[in-house]
Length: 112
Length: 112
Image 1: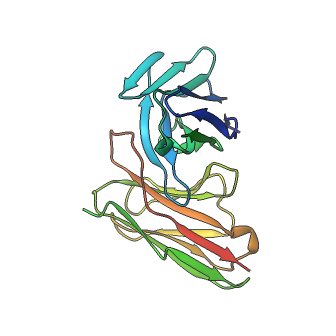
Image 2 (image 1 turned 60 degrees about the vertical axis):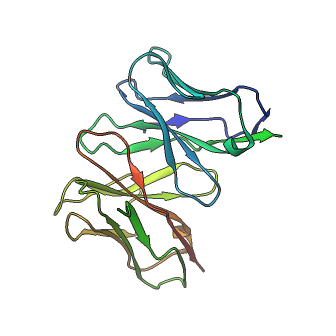
Image 3 (image 1 turned 90 degrees about the vertical axis):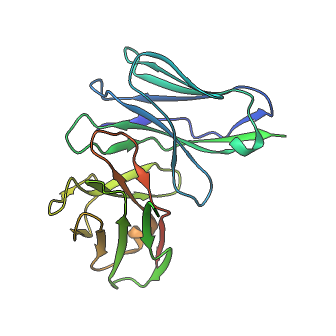
């Protein structure tokens, strides 16, 4: 059973701080990793994806991947109250069906 | 361009009743997916369809059937609803060669 593990939180950070969200995965053959944001009652929306070891930056968001440690993280700089949501880590299956295996999500609260 | 649409948005069923959840996408995507999301859990794959005319089971297919009617539409049927099927159901699609899964707005189903 392929697993994706996240701390459920809530992770509480003050406005303007850096929020660090972490995820580990069990399938060593996984190649593609995704971070989705999900507001309460809404569908997931893609924030970033990463394939290669190292960092990938997009605006205030940085995804970090370490395949040797089977670890992927998301940093949110200058956190805003509007960033308060559940963040889902997802790993694309290393099969032809290209489905995603999701973690249970980390709830982030940004305090004004 | 509506993206991925789902109907209905909300539904309440009694145990033993049947219903079909509808999903359609207008992005000409080949692959379509049905996930369910339960409180405190990530999304879990029910069924997927790699292309028109093909379907296959995901990790939690019991109690469900699917139909890929054409390239646009992928429906999920509950033949005899059970309280354990109370959940939020998301349909998603993906284009060939790309990695982003586009999600519909979800159907919130309660089985009493």
